[in-house]
Amino acid sequence: MTLPFSNEAESSLLSCFLQDPVNRIGDARNTLNVSAFHSDAHKRIFTGLVTLYDTGSPIDAPLLTQHFRNKGELELVGGAAYISELYCFVPHSSNYHQYKSIVEDKYLARRNIEAHQKALEAFADESLPIANAIAKAQEAMDAVENTVVRKLARITIKDAIAQTMDEIEERMKRGGAIPGWTTGFPMIDAKCGGLQKGRVTVFAGLPSDGKSAIMQNCARNALVAGARVAWYSLEMPNTEQMMRLLCEDSGVDNGALYSGFMSRAQQEMLLRSIRQLSELGCDLVNTDNATASDILSDIEHGGYDVAVVDYLQLMEDEGRKGATREEIIARISRRMKQVAKRTGTHILTASQLNDAGKLRESRAIGQDADGVFMISKVENKNGDGTDDTLRNLFCDKNRGGSRHWTLPLAFSGPTFTFKEIPA
Image (cartoon, rainbow, N blue to C red; front, side):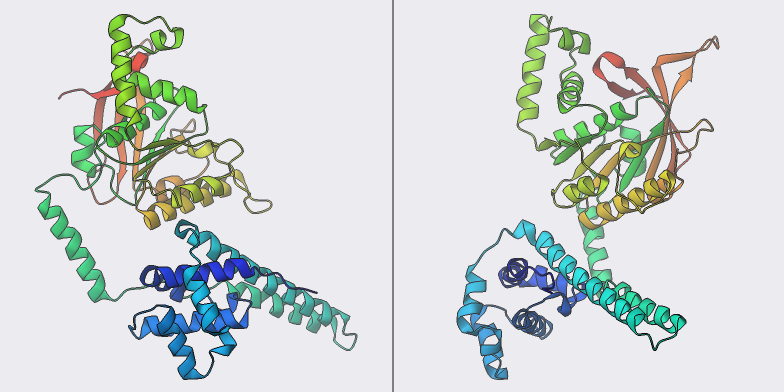
């Protein structure tokens, strides 16, 4: 039986190491098991690269060749020609994580096959009592579980202090400017520092309270300020999302935009908005048939400053067999936070509230998020319902900052725009 492996992915991964040794080997030395490589030559090359990296040696094809020549292993790794071939073969660097994932997946598949073979051999051994056969089978499966446990990346406290002081110095140079991208809401920027790197902000409310609109307002203001923004709308097609964005940015009434009957002034306002938005770094991502894994992977490799996921409870994922909806949402919420933290992307998402006014389906949403805002309509003064033009935004959570404050907002439905109401 031929065990699964991908020679192409292994060689592409090694090429990535040679092209960008500081970043790629620094990542892989703590997270990739050398046994993940199927080819003995590739195992030796990876070990050689890590050795050079750990000793602080410069890394290129001639130096790696000399390293193996000194060890008497040059022919075992394919010779100088193969090392040069790896160095000259330049795969797309942005696909590094995909190459690494393929190599790891093939390795895990091989380990699973080997574990099942050992389990079958244990049960086929008639001399073994059934309890012993079960124990041997379990031991084989546990070995597979241990395969995926990797040494986590780490830095010394000295390096951590240096990185922290660099960030403090950078903030001092800004002269009091907020550390994140502006939301366009002065009070939110002042109390939360804007849309800071690596954070998740959740806007929660009942249907039609304006969750999507306020996320759009925050993201558009960051976009105009120069942020790279991605929209993952699970609730509406990209054309409808774009229509709303044009309404907000141009100030043109959505009724006029939807009907196509616009005055000359409105046409000019719309044209200015089209010109402005067309020059900015924004992508509207097609989420048809996309799972949560697809969306989070796209964010991870997209290089965005801000990502809008509208909204959390609409995300689907493969999940664990038999898992409840609450468990699935909790898993998605945790992974969303991990992606934000790893990439530095600020993720804006929304959540429905249940009848008790709590985050629906999972408390993990609030636990994982860095900021949680509850948006609600304001009761009419005469007590006969709500005023559709007024909202209250309540800060329920603000990691590292003040919370339990309320921001009164005015809402313009025709342009999907919120504005702070001056105190």
